[in-house]
Length: 145
Image (cartoon, rainbow, N blue to C red):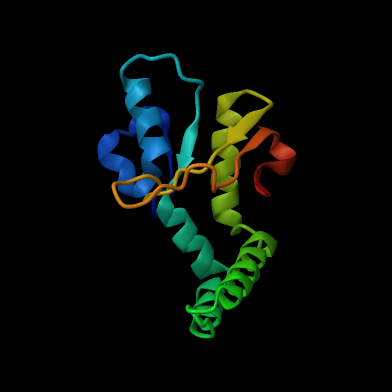
């Protein structure tokens, strides 16, 4: 099984493509000795695996083929359908197990689940405030967030 998770201390700024900007920055700060709460990043390839294992990749492709990109309502409808498909799908068992193992290693009850998109903020795009954050997440809700 490929590596889908890395602890902050294993990440550097070179890992933006797999861990996102926020994840890579947390790694840099951890390695620089800056006080950062312990944590880990679920890498971008984990999402690829999720789509493959849940058979969502083909369904999403088919949904996107129906979109009229000149019609914002069409784009909005497809976006809602795809988001619901992803939210309703179960995380593959092996991936869920790895996430829970890493959570338990932290030995804390509440964690923050933050986004760290690989193209989140760049010279041509900014996603500030667009992606969800889940605070006070526990083991019970971790795989839902």
